[in-house]
Amino acid sequence: MKKQSSPLSFLVLGMGDLYSRLYYHTHFIIFLDDVPILVDCPDPLPKALYESSRKAKIAISMDDINHIILTHLHGDHSNGLESLGFYNYYIRKHKPVIYTIPEVRDAIWENKLKASMGHKTNSDFEEVGNLQLSDYFRVKILEPGKTHTIRGMKIAIRYTNHFIPCFGFKVYYQGRSLGYSSDTSFDREHIQFLSDCDLFLHETNKGGHTPYEKLLDLPREIKQKMMLVHIPDTFDIVKSEIPVALEGRLYCV
Image: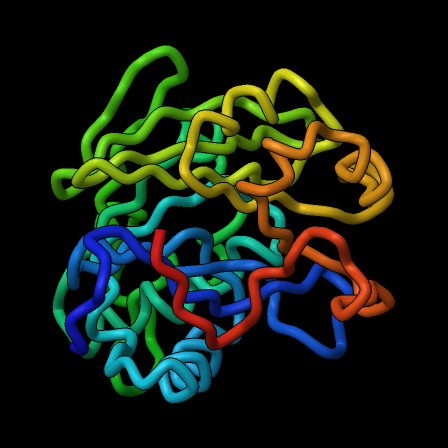
């Protein structure tokens, strides 16, 4: 993997919303020096990894994904867990770690993955046993009000205002800091939580998300630290007063 010029950087794999025809769903990789931490896991993860890594000239694939911060269970943030789990179970023989909140941990298997990943069959497709979440992944819980550590990176989380349990976060590594709003309606307290970071990504969209116009009204010193993700296809990237974090682009914090 190519050495990064900053100890904390991130590669954008997707910047679009649930309905996008132009972009991949919003997800990205945080690099701690050369250690990758995947943030959210939509489909098609292998293709998004391949295309963005080629654009950024970084050799990274499914084989490198050992840590996943999973903010919530909407499909545009979590549907890639099936392909990642199968790949690691059958090909890599490895268990990546998912870092998430208790509400996600409690629902992820029974309400999402079990139907497709819970059956173990032989070569004649006869069921020979059952599989559990623990056969595919290890899960570590993140709690608000506490600071946790992922591979030397400090992470603090905050619940967002969304349709299902969801959290944003900020991370600190080697004197630099990065924040991510995750999916949320407009929330000044959440923005305040993120605003002490050197840089933070904030979603913008409609229907339970954060309108762009609300972000434009923020103080200049906050907007200067902000980049946008989770944009609709109709969003004018060129005219946006707040820059968009572009797919296949590596950003140093």
